Length: 601
Image (tube, rainbow, N blue to C red; front, side, top):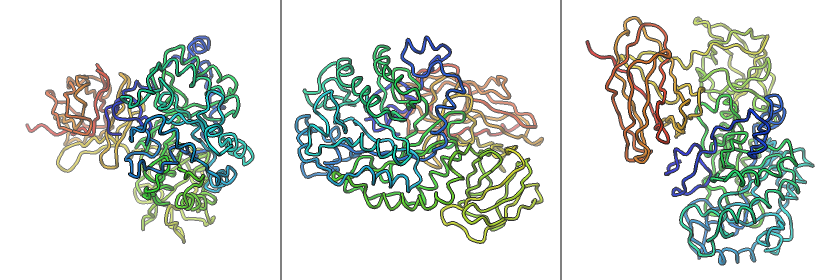
């Protein structure tokens, strides 16, 4: 996410760079059911046990299908004979297509090859446990026969069907959970709907509150009462008034088990975090979360986009996400004829073949007890079973450190082959190499005497040969707040740093020869508009006297080094170094790394 909303709290899906939004993950007091009902906050009086029961199927599912399909699919990424850059479903905005002109495309939208049963079968064969489909995207076109107005697939096209209803029925028959996506903030067709920046057509002028009452709230009621979705997936939260929040959630009691994401707006947290097009390095410890991602480069159909991710990448993404306790919502973009592209189906079919024999290492599992394994692989847990997905098998065997629970046996999941388990010289457990290795990932199950107990030393940072300590963003413990690791591999930083409780911690071990004073050098970026946050550096919870004020850089992608005026003293032994915000202007910074360098005596 490289735009002016980077520090708004969440990487909001498809949002234009000019659109400024408030964080959806604002703190919500759920201690009082009465207060929650009055404010419209869903499930505000819910106990932990009740929440666990409601979220149970979702947590077990791990893998779902996202479907972006709408009138934008008819354009296939082109307008007036020319390609339009950006996501396919954003073509109206990116092409500045007038409202009336855009609407005329509905005459030609006739997806006669749409078959809900076939779509659901593709998802089920891939091992997906739920589907979320766009009921109305930012274009304002409803993919169901809404009674609100006639800008919908039944009244405005030759295709007299209800795709949402047919998908809901097909999912129910196949035993797959069905959810709907609804764009509640942006609507480029109806007057008053959000436009993601400056409006380009006078027809879009109007009051958002009027739009909300006339279009948004009634359509949400229709979707809930007509189709009873298991998930309601909102997008790009707005600054809803308390009255609008109540209007949006008024129909929620019709489905007490309804799950919503964190993009509704108005200060409503929702049930789970939604990182987009990325996998957080550390996941969201203690929180439910779901990565949504495209198979190629677009969500809505673009005929020219053939940059499909390989099956290996997609499947390893799923394995990685599950090991961090998240779900993978993988998108398909059907054609205007109603067909999921062959290249997408092919990849889903191959994923399904692997999941059919190895899915137990993904479904219903808990996160890895290790922050990082000592080999190229991922781990998950289910009761007394510890699963290892080994991506590249070490020639000497896969070694596990810190596992204190007795291993009863080890087997390859796909074949049942028994594997040797021996102790290495360093006390690690070494799992013998299987006879046959899966080119994508070889899943192994260790049956233990009890749920695994692990002493994880993988996050421990030792002194380097030059005397420095290198504290990378990916090695930080962020469990005491809501800050997240973001960015591409090798370029990650700690971002989404918006609350005083968001503390970043590193565990370091100082040898006797390394005791002494260290200079503190931060590598970070900060948008010029929100510079000025202050922070302290603590050691083992005590102030060190080292503190700083975040100076601006030219933008979130411009990283600079800054040495703090005061040094820190490190005694020999193990310590926890913390960066604690003291004052936040809007967001602290994007912190890529801290380098501790010994002060020459």
